[in-house]
Image (cartoon, rainbow, N blue to C red; front, side, top):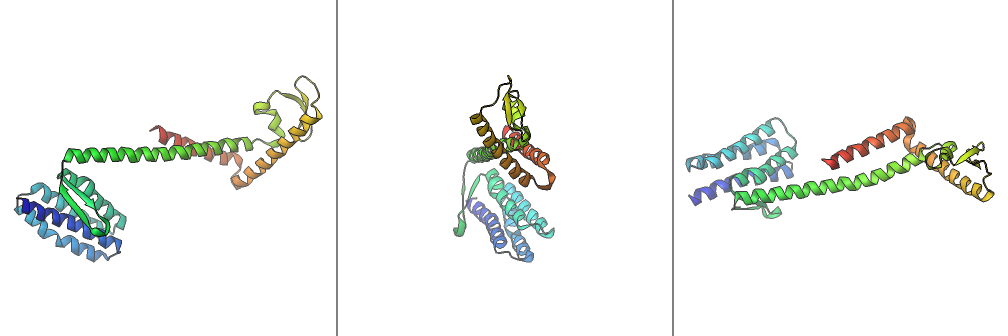
Length: 237
């Protein structure tokens, strides 16, 4: 009976809409419960019309709302359950429900499989967007980690490690190379450039010390590496 279907779906969707509006205006729990109990007539009529699946879904929604209110659930939990009605319950019944903002809602009968396919595609799109967001954040964090790891090298050890390892054989008190690996003296011009590099490293090292705070540079780097590793794992899944 089309009229029975229309009346039952209207009652179901009306309850959902009323609950959403009550939550948005931060209504008292008794107002929500009153709306929930008022829907019993719609459930009874659906059962009487032989709309068993719709009546069962409607009644489950009513029961869930009642339970959420009785245990003083956060408003967002009520809204989540309302979303389930639109995204799951109505789809299973072959009904497309569209929220229209201040204009309420619109529902229509539609193909269940087509709606489920649309939802799957939308979910995949959302997941990919979330993964891309993490990838972008990961890229930035990896760059920050590389910068921090370079800055973490103690200035007086700078020319004895990394890409400089093995290039020089002697150093002054500040760690500036004075002789090449073969024993030749470092030229005055080259030494001037090395002094500038060392000064920059000193500045970067002190900046990193301030960033690290009381926990120290090693702990700071360990935390950054863990964040990067966690994000790499999220991207991989």
